[in-house]
Length: 179
Image 1 (cartoon, rainbow, N blue to C red):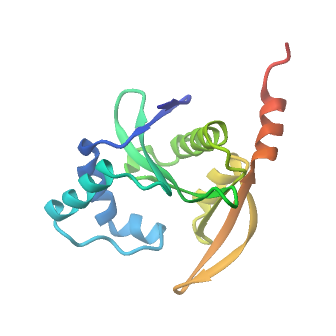
Image 2 (cartoon, rainbow, N blue to C red; image 1 turned 90 degrees about the vertical axis):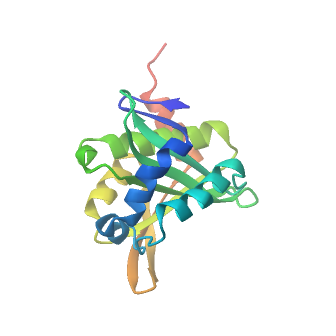
């Protein structure tokens, strides 16, 4: 578990399944992520969800985003973990709209970046977001991710962003109190 000022990142639980199903079924959330909402039944979803919890992938680490009062408000993940290249891709969703535009996403992304660089040997974190998702871009820039290109895929245009361990370490040294 990783705590920050607004949230805790914790391992996923079976009790998160209902929220995750609702968020993955939501058309607006799917549009923001350039995906298609899921259409299977909750029961079918729960079977796959349970399997993923019991047999996690080596190439993917998922976390629930929880407020300090215990509300599961979203998820974040790092995936496509490539130790040979020393990199991974980051993803986030704040599914509970009551927590949008209040700094919870920024706090979660910062906490996940901190976790990755402290707990792994990975040197680069990157992500892609729709060029039209300005709220996400602001969040990622607050977390010191820098634009590094564009990608067109499946009729969507994405902004690519990244941060390197060396940059993160430099920012940590600037932000730590002098002894």
